[in-house]
Length: 285
Image 1 (cartoon, rainbow, N blue to C red):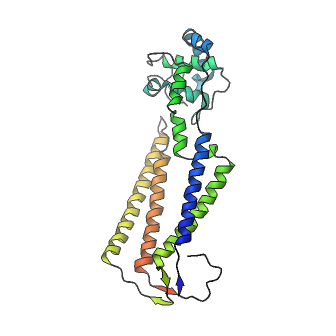
Image 2: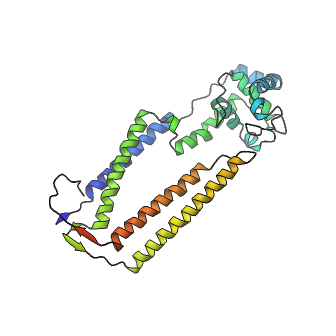
Image 3: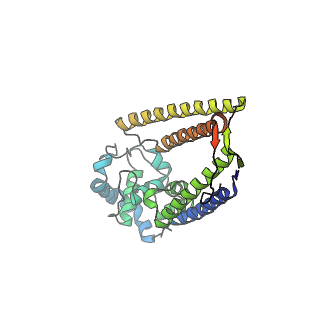
């Protein structure tokens, strides 16, 4: 007879949770917005420069992708774009940091960034109550801009550094160890008795098995459907970026439901055999 112990797996999962909190702290510290320095000279010249300087900067750096009249092309349509007029700071962030296929416009000076941003915000049907200024950007970043919030909600590969990679790897090892241990404790019981063990599934276990299989089929359908929608959107004239988050959710739920089905089968439907000879050197579960 050998005793299954859930203590060590629980300690491993608790340690992984603590390390996960440390990892989030390190990552969030890296993604905090940098304070914006408000230059009075730039503010004074913004309204004067954007009709001329902004137009020249747009023609030289932006028109090739967004169209001479902001009609769109390789880049998104800017004419009549409510997204940028409702959130001008988003436009500034995109110019400075880049987004998707658009690189960061690091060659532009500060006054040129504000000039071209305001040129876009005041042309082709776009309008904003006040010109975009460093003060507007500073206020927007004080509320945390969308890019920072996005990074804080998930780990972006290009932003990960060695400490996060090391911690993430060790966390996955601890979680795997702990989950296998808890599963063993649940599926095989607190004590292992040598011999053949016959199991008889209860109606509740049968219902749980049917439900997990049905959910697996449902998420499989949703995954294939989402892949098809994303493929059609990507091939459309105005390309729509794939919804990778939803695809990942459905794929993860498929794997989770399969794991639940296998666990239920092991616990309630599969006869088992326990042969205990020597427990030395084995994992403590």
